[in-house]
Image (cartoon, rainbow, N blue to C red; front, side, top):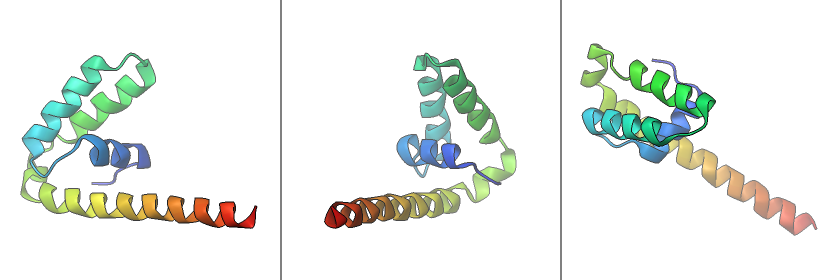
Length: 87
């Protein structure tokens, strides 16, 4: 399964290692979202997570995406530190 950066951010923010709980959380978030574009993104991602074959390897995918997003966050912080040091 190929995930967009926005989907990875959703999974990092609202996801957990349990696929069923992640789906439930995302459907609740979609119900609370006012922005139609964001709402569509969340619903589309929920539908993508409904794939039956995903259940076998979702936990591995979750931890991989989590690690990738943590590295991304650390790189952003490092970039901000470098920019502040130049000033």
